[in-house]
Amino acid sequence: MAQESQLEKPGLDHFGLLGLEPSPSIDPDELEIRYLKASRKVHPDLNRDREEAELIEASSRLNEAYRVLKDPWRRLPYLAELYSPCILEETKNMAPCFLMEAMELGEMVEEAHAHPEKALELERDLSQRLDRLQARIEDLLQDTTHADEAARLCHEARYVLRALSNLRREESK
Amino acid sequence: MAYSDKVIDHYNHPRNVGSLDKSQDNVGTGLVGAPECGDVMKLQIEVDPESGRIVEARFKTFGCGSAIASSSLATEWVKGMTVDEALEINNTKIVEELSLPPVKIHCSVLAEDAIKSAIADYKSKQEGHQEGAAE
Image 1 (cartoon, rainbow over the protein chains, first blue to last red):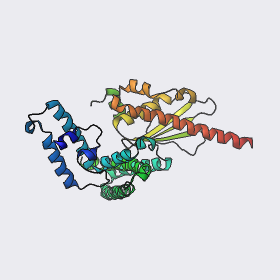
Image 2 (image 1 turned 30 degrees about the horizontal axis):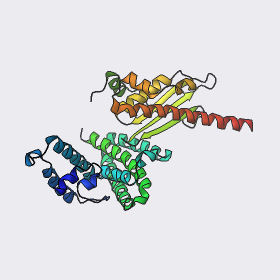
Image 3 (image 1 turned 90 degrees about the vertical axis):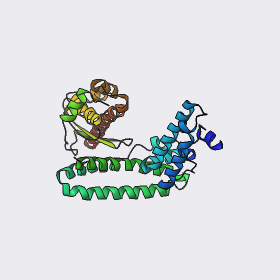
């Protein structure tokens, strides 16, 4: 019963909902197991003695927590914000030199559409860049002190993710 | 979510795509981004020094249909305006014209910011120019 009441505790963050301590990296298998277990505890068919509206509310919070935590590009900004509220908003003005780079990135993606042989190379470059960003941000979020730098890099990653998804969308056509 | 006909029209036939020579004194360049979605927008204006009117405008946007339509519309609107008139354009007017849904309002904000940033760049060039001339 203790577990059940914990699920409805309104102040609990996404990590807490799944019984985890806030942390930048998560083992995806462990996360899934925890999610499935917690889901059973709030499934209406398995909990007929409880108020259905309550269960629906609890499971929608659980689903949201799982959706955020399993994706590093949702989890990391979420954690930065957890460590330092409003940090994403405060850091969202990107340096002009980075915006130029983002513009160039867009142009490279456009060019790759016309030259498919360049697309693969670019896709690899962008994926590697994302991996490096992720490693760096995970490192910064080992404790709460570098949330600002982590948030800035999360914004940077958003542009790279955008470029990558544009590139892949065009390839799949 | 369905795009309005006007958004689709601008998306399929964007007006004034391209670049102006940013090294020119009478060209202002605005570069803005929205990290929430990874959109980036460049908007440039060319001002006739005699009349103070914007004679040419270009944009390049990497983003969703609404961001492209907002910046395309912005370049259409600013042409022929004075710099001060162009500063009056706000995102609400863009939202109304394109019937943007609430989730896409940030695209119109981006276009407004791009206009303002291009004008700020133009003005700072003019001030630098005048100081240079006075010396």
